[in-house]
Amino acid sequence: MRITFLGAARMVTGSSFLLEHNGFSFLVDLGLAQGNDEERMGEALPFSACDIDAVILTHAHIDHSGRLPMLAKEGYSGPIYATEATKRLASIMLSDSAHIQESDAAWKSRRSAREGGEKVEPLYTSADAAMELFQSVPYCQRIFLTDDISFMIIDAGHLLGSASVKVFFQEDGKEKSIVFSGDIGNTGQPMLRNPEYFDSADWAIMESTYGDRLHEKAEGNEKDVLYRRAEELAAITDRTFRRGGNLIIPSFAVGRTQEILYLFRIIMDKKILPYEIPVFVDSPLSVKATAVFASCLRDDYFDDEARELIEKGINPILFPSLTAVIDAEESKKLNLRKESAVIISSSGMCEAGRIRHHLKHNIWRSDSTILFVGYQAEGTLGREIVDGAESIHLFGEEIMVNAEIAILKGTSGHADKNGLLEWISAFSAKPAGIFVVHGEEETAEYFASMVSSRFGIKAYAPDIGEDFTFGSEFPEEGEVPLRRHSAKMLRPRLEELEKQKNEIDDIFSRLKNRVSAEDLSDEKNAERLGRALKRFSDELSEISRRWNGKA
Ligand SMILES: [Zn+2]
Image 1 (tube, rainbow, N blue to C red):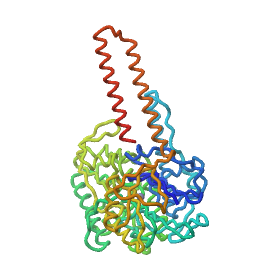
Image 2 (tube, rainbow, N blue to C red):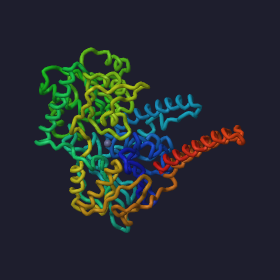
Image 3 (tube, rainbow, N blue to C red):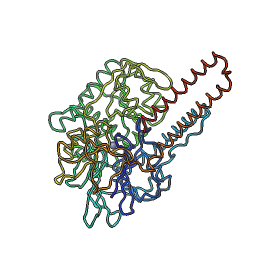
Image 4 (tube, rainbow, N blue to C red):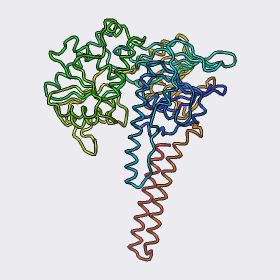
């Protein structure tokens, strides 16, 4: 069995692994890269879609599922295995992603046209073809892909329907296994069960998003912790409302928004504040996702506390002062409201969507609060604000950051360092080697060395395009391996190189025109030509610097 690390390798997004065994090729996840990762990974699929025989999807988040419509568009017609909840969530998330791809491409095309460039094609415009390929699979059941390859999923406790995957295969008459952690959930998340663990594997591929950090440790049982978090949210809401401002919450539409609603329901239920809080969920996707959560209430996805509520006929994420905003006009009207309100909108990292309008109308106001409730990747607007930007650029304007910038602690959907170590401890038969993925470069490296020293397990943070054949020698910790980029993986880099070649040609022809125009016998002209040559060499070294940063 051979694995190629196609994404989320020394970065957080774009999760994708290609597995090949006895002529059978399948993927675990096929996510979209976001923020800075986009440039490193390139957009094109690094394989031919028709060569893939099956896909296993760990969960619906776009950084794990976002390129599935591209796969279908390029001719893939095999099954996409996922839980029923993942299928329902993916259906709304991927069609939303298709709209984003379309409008992004239209925007880029307009800009390109103004610069005399070419039209930019969207990655895909519909998710329907991909959705038709989904096949629901239950937790804890062995599913056979071929006679000698099978898999089983368990609850990863990260998002409704999320899974860790164990792949089994036969090698030299023996059964071997590889566990993919998927995204490992945080314990005590509202509604979701805590992550389940596999107890044996020959190898593991695990995430490391928070591999070098600890979430603030909360004392007490999970219910108390959750209530205290609701109290903290109430306090932030109260001080914002007392100032007369709005509480703006950029939130991932799927999962996090519903968790925040769960906390607001507790605040209302327990009457933590002496008044009703008007809460607006302003994102069509969030509203749809909330409906999907509600449609799964009777299924086996929720923790005991949520199930208790459901059995009493209480919907754990709905309350009377909650308003769903779907219509764009209604969304604009929110900015005209005189009274304070809570506005939960997406995208969670402020990269797109209605949240950008709410930021524009509120981030300059010292009475409002921007409350972050999730991970902010490097290179995103959300990260810029969290890192203390004094002003931000939105819709061509520079806008001052005067609002209170707050972070609701403990809301992470990912296990922290201890949670990740716990995941490894749970193996009674420890893996021979662990590939550490889905973490920023330094984090993944740090966590890999931590795994080696703590458990004596060989651990390694692979780079994009690296591959490994299970059973062969594991790369040593600290060893800098030869990057085995397959020819296919080089495509995005070659495209980049070609772009740079064109730039160089352009600079060169400008220089040449200059030479023919100047009279070289004139001393002054020679001086000017000298300066032009200097500029030429500066521009060349700038290009070479950029290329080195990428290669
Ligand atoms: Zn996720």
